[in-house]
Every structure is written in C-alpha cells, then in structure tokens.
Length: 300
Image (cartoon, helix red, strand yellow):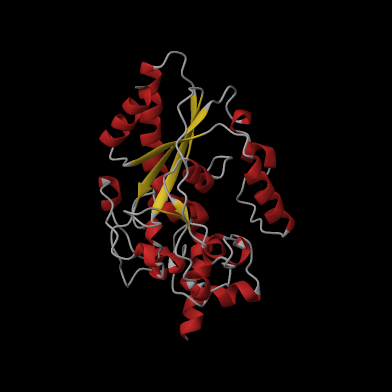
C-alpha cells in the first residue's frame, strides 16, 4: 500500500520511472569496482571510499531500501549546439533535488519516524547500478542505463531511506550490442564488453579542470562540444524514435550553445552569477574558454 502511494505521488510529480533497490551491501558491485580501480579506471569524481559505494547504511544509519527515480531529459536535437543535451535546460541537479525532497517529505507525513537522504550525482552510491537493481532500465555496452520509452537520455536520482520497501526485480536483458558506440567513441573509451575507461571519455575530458595532455586535446578535437558528449547515445539504436520528456522543467529556458564572446570580459564572479543555474556552470569560465580555444584552433 505504501509503495503504491509512493508511485502515485511520483507520477503526480511527472516521474514515470520509480523503483526500489535493496539496501545492500552490493558485493557483486564491489568486485566490479575493485577491478576497475585496479585497471586505473578512476577519474576522481567518484566517491573515494569504496565501502561507502556498496553499503547504503554507511550513508544513512538503518537504511532498509533505496528509492530510485529516472528523469528523462531529451527535448530534441539541435545541430548547432556545442553543449551536450544534458545541459540544454537549467541545472538538472536543482530540478531533481527539489522533486526528491518532495518525495521524502511526503513519506515523512505517511510513515512514522521516516528518515532519508536524497542524492543526484553527488551521492556515494553508483546510480546506474541502482537503476538497474530497481528494474528501471538495462545496461548498454556504453555503460548507460537504457529505457524503452526514453532510451538512455535519463538522469538518475535516489533516496536512501529507513523504510523496508519491497525491492523490484532487475530486467533480464541488455542492449543489442551492435557496437556502434564502440566504433564512434572519439577516445575509444568504450571497450565493447560493458567496460569503460572514463579517462578517455570525451565528456570527462571537457569537464576536467587540470591541463589536458596532447592525447586528450586530440580527443577533444574529434567533436564540436565544449561540455559533455552525446556521441555514444546519438548512434545508439535504442535512442531512435524515442519520446521527448514529459517533464515540463526540461522544456524551459533551453540553451544550446555558448560562444567566446559571451565569456570575454567576464570575471569568475560574473560568470557564476550569469551561468550558476546551468548544468555546466560548476566547471567554471576558465575550462569553457580553454575548450572553446582548442576547438577554434582546430578550425584554423
């Protein structure tokens, strides 16, 4: 009954995909993560403490389940964009954080002594793995979670909580494994066996604040985006003829590109004031100017 009420409330918030992941610990995930770390597939954006990535109870004492929600964001293509589709709208972190908070506060009203912690991108757990456990999608060999309605253009948010919601079942399927994403990846980061080297991922490279190596600059110059990358998703057959998101917030205040003239003369404070509510705002003016400069040099 409580789970049905949860899903009904989520649907009222325009959240179509909501499921429950078990509270862990996720020992099979631990083996995967240990293997990746051993291979050096680590960017520094991840939670540094491995145990916190597999034990929800280390983040919320008494954790008994994890509510997982997907937030489709596809609003269509724009051939003139130099930002990834994930950055077209206002900062998705704020949009999703607000909705997760509404869910948590609603449950506090209906469940005695309910406690929770909500995360979007900034949490210790592996959100795509949680979405898989919650039965919300299946893995592609590009490491994205794929849905039937919206393909892989979905953000993931989750709520660690102390209520024993019944877990959902993972889907017993994967992508068609056509290999299009493997051959199209600019940095050859997608290895074809559901493994990914994130250090060679163009999306990571565009967000890296440290100086880029010659190899990273070469990878950057294989695309025209200054923030993020959509290539492995754009070529994926699961993303053909997908629906645009029904979430109103992702259709508002769309911005497809940013040019050097918009950044020239801006101080860091002015940049934050102007773009602090955009998804790319956190990487700062300096990184965007660098990326624009490298791409302009390529054209010359």
